[in-house]
Image 1 (spheres, helix red, strand yellow):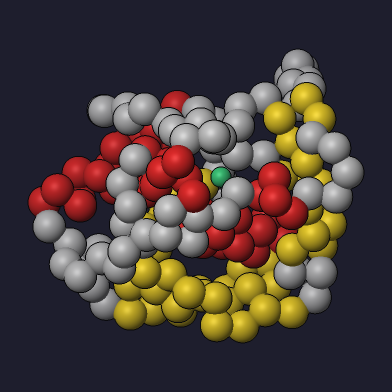
Image 2 (cartoon, helix red, strand yellow):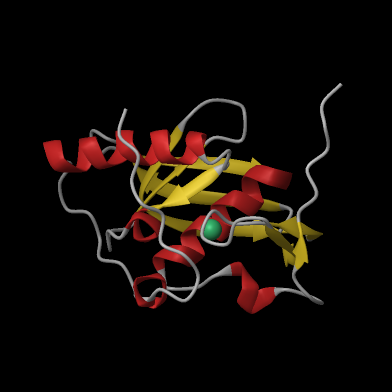
Length: 157
Ligand code: ZN
């Protein structure tokens, strides 16, 4: 298990546009593993490569239904609307209200560089949009309605 340093809001690398992944090299496979370790360690549901300082179009997601790797992802369909709290591992302890599509379909490539499509609703749709935004140098704070607020963690019973 290898944790990578998560870049924080204000770091210039988070404003840069990422390059496409052309080939899944051993280095990319290691990056994917490290990104999952880093995301789970931070209790996040998604992480984009630029958040660990790598300007490549690669994201990992796990909203609790298992790990998803998306290489060169792109939104190809979206509909509806949802408004709710969003947070980011690059801005820990904070959240803000963002409106996203309720349904999103993405196309992406897997670790064998095979193209696939995936649909998501609610949290998964939100995660697709949030993480793909990172690949274009955007953070959710640019889209918040109202102020950022502190995240209050509730004790589990
Ligand atoms: Zn984020």
